[in-house]
Every structure is written in C-alpha cells, then in structure tokens.
Image (cartoon, rainbow, N blue to C red; front, side, top):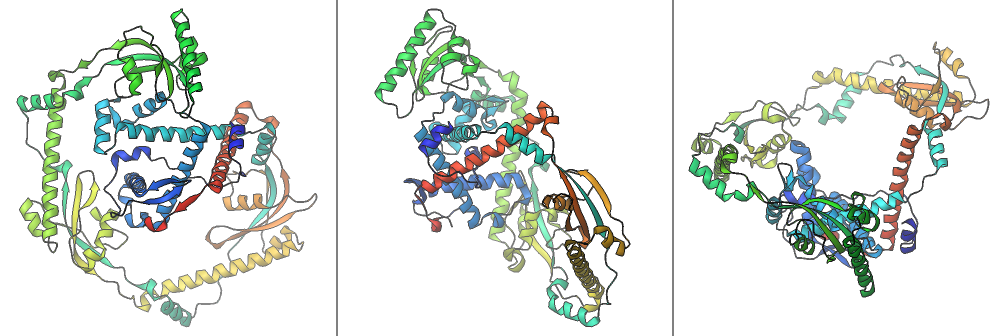
Length: 636
C-alpha cells in the first residue's frame, strides 16, 4: 500500500495538522438555512471539481446543528458564526475532496455490503433497535435526499476512512523505535530544589499611587449593569391533557400507521464478491465474470460455500465470516443484488449477479416471512402516542399564537399572556454574568442584554430552554453601571498594587539568584543565605505525583548535565512564588525490564502517532500538487 501511494503521489511527508470532520449523518437533523440566498456558484474548486454553495451551506448547517446539540444552552451563535470557522470547514471539505480523488486514482472500491452495514447501524434509521426501511426512507424524504444520494455520501465517507486507515497501517515502527520511546518515557532525573519564600512587604502604597491607578482603570470600578425581566414560559412537559382516545380513534391510528407494526420479510444470505473497479475495461470485466462462473461451478459440484468465500471473496467485511451477510430486508442493498436475492428460494445458489461492486454469487440460507403486530398488541402504545401528539399539537398551537402575539405587540407581554391563559412571571435583578431561575440560561441572559430587548424595549424572540420548552422576555428594570467612589475601592486598589509590587520583587530576586547559580555558586550556599535547606529528589519520573507539575516539567526541560556537573534552573510556581533547582543526573528507562503487554501498548501508541504523521504528510503532498481555487467572498 505504501509503495503504491509513493508511486502515484510524489511529494515530501511533513507534519501538518489534519482535520477531517465527517458530518455525513448530521443531515438528518439540519437547521433552517443560515445563509441568505445567493447565485449558484462554487465556493472552491479542487482540481476542477466544484464545491458548490449548496454543498457548503448544507455542511455548515449540519456542523452548526451538531455543535448546538452538544453545547445546548451554552451555544453562542455569534461566537460560532465567524469567517474563520467557515474557512476552517471549507479547508476540511477540500481535504476530503483531495482524498476522494486519490481514492479514484488508486481504484479503491467500497463494497455495497459495507455501505449497507453502515446505514443499518445508524440509530436514526432504527425502530426498537432494529433497522427500519420505512423509517430510512421517511427520514431521507424529510431531508429531500434520495436513497441513492445518501448511499453515495456514505460510500464516500467509508472510502475516506479506508484510505486514511491504510496509510496509517502502512507506517513502520521498529523495535528500535519502541526502545527509544520507552527509554525517554521512563527516564528519571535526580535534582535538588528550594522554594523561595515571598519577599517581605515593600514600601507602603502611597495614596497618590492609588489615585493614579483609580483614574487609569476607571472602567474596572463601575457597578455592574443589571436587569430584571418579565417573562412568559411555555413548557409542554407541564401541560395537562384531558384527552382520552376511544378505540375508534386508536383503530384509525393503527390503520394509518400499520406499516410501522410490520416486520418485513427478511432473508439470511451469504455471498462471494468478485470485485470489478469502476474504471475496469472489458477485459477486466470478462475476467471477473469468468472467475465468478468458475466459483459457481465449484459450488454446484459440492464445494463448501464458506470455504470458497474465505478464499476468493473480495468483500473484506464478510469473507472472514464465510461470506455471511446476516438477515437482509428490501431497500438496503444494491438493486440488482436485491432483485436476485428476493427471487430465490431457500437453499438456492445464484448465477453471478452484476452490481456496481462486481459479480456476486448469492446463497439464500433462510427466510423469515413478513409478520404484523395486531391492534391489541399495540393498543397501549398507540394510546400513549395519541396523548403525546395531542399535547404536542396543543403546545405547537399555543406557542405559535404566543409568537404571533408578541410580534404584533412587542411592547408588552400582558395581552398575549391574558389571551392564552398564561402567567407573566418576574426575575430578580441580575448582571451579565447571570442570575437565578431562567437567568441561569446563557441564551436568556444574552437576549436580556441585547440591543433589541434592553435598548429598544422590545419583547425577545422565543428562547428555547429545552425540547418543547420556550420563554419570551421583556426588561422590567434596568440598573445602569455607575462609577464606584474612590473610598469604596481604595483598599481593593491598595491590595492590587501591593500584590503587583510583591510579584515584581519576587521575580527580580529569583532572576538574581539564578544568575548567581549560573556563574557557579552552589545551590546550598545560596539557600543558606535565605536560611533555607534544599530538598533532594532522586529517580523522579515525568509523571511524578508528589511534586508540583511546573517544577517537574522545568527539570525535564533542561539538557542532560555533563559528567560531574550540574545544570541550574528556575521555575515560577503558583501565587507568584518561585523555585530554584539544580539537575545532577539523568537515567534512561530500561525497556528490557518491561513485560510484553507494556511493550505492545507502547508500540500501538507509536503506530498511532506515526500513522497520523504519515496521513497528514500525504494530505499535505496532495494539497501542494493540487490546483485549488477559493472564493472567499462567497463564504460570508
């Protein structure tokens, strides 16, 4: 694999940061379009391939929606939607396109079985933990995607993973590399150190210095701006529904949704794939068919299917299991494969079947016929769903009316609340750092201090506090920031200036003492002048838990001392304190003393690191050789 890559793609392997965000599946839950409509044109071209504005917009919206779901109330749209983030995502899309083009040149083919297994494993397409074809088609239709389009995107995602994985696996890590790593990892050091006490208090802080600091930092001594809010909250989980469905309503639901209670016919199958590349010529096609026909003859002559699959199948995902594909339903495999499979009888072995991946020989091992759950079996389930849907409809209706009402009259909450039977509630005063109740939610705080709500006096847009849970707010009171009098903050400023004076003195003293050590004075002598005793540490490793981390890091950052010599150093610790130290000896780790399991773990760590470097270097070489054009103005 590595030789093929080297032959086809020249260029140096260098260490760069690789970022590829696979957001193939985020499309199920995209948010509304974020960009204003623009002319249909590219945002970038990669070796002539255009990345359109539609592609970029969909990808960005998916990425944004995923981030918003992960962060919840902490998500800040203003901080997220930056030109830098958009350019970062575009660069990732360019990286992916370069790798897909490399896949094409290398002839990497993704078996249809791998696509099927990937799709069937996506929770969004499952009902009760099992893949549901109707759910699959329904979700794709809601996103205006065809199964073919989605399967192509899944295929591309798998292809990217295959290529990056193969490059990583081709990276060589030798026994010598592992030993070098372990010697460094397990290295220990001997040293002495002394913590310096804080200097004695300096000169008293003069009132003139306090006055000057107060004037120079006036913005630091303002009272916090505060607001209190009127708000109306709507939470579906707290809404009571008195609706109780009768059997007729539930029977109607059952009839309308009967497909959801049907377990479709399933067929247990195995196959042997003779792969044919996308760009294979007629001779290659003919050779693959001949091989498939030869295998078919062996099977009909009594040869074991699983044995031949393990020996001859090109489907890496199933050959080790003797070609076993498990139980298959309609709508999840290649159309030609599916047509042949569902026309067979139990126990049949097919003639070679041509698909996009090559030629398949299919063995139908068993059949589960379609099964339907009865009305009585699902009646309770339907009743609960009916009540939930009625509550959702009621919530949707009231929230829509609430939104309309505040848009019609953004100057008051009272009319809307009265019309909808809702209560206008109040918060206490809180600052931009937040408060209690709904004021703990960053989105509420942001809205409260927004220009529209705070300065213009409008009611906010609905703010999502959770699933089917919104609030709208208006400012009740606004307390503007005011300068605090000097006398109120005088001691605070005195403490600040005193701390600054102390920190400066501590740094100057530590620097002076280190200079003496570097000139050859002994650490114990310098410490004695301060009536301190150095502490000796022997055999300290990089992850020592009994010492302060900055001290250990500083010791390991020093070069190895010459024989019979020491290397001095200084490090800042917490609270403006410092430590002086001298490194006496360095002892390498001994790989020969480690058990096989520890060495194997180290080998895996190195493989991951070297594989990452190889992959990023390969990508860098692709970028250098590619013709890439970016339309920056179309990212805004």
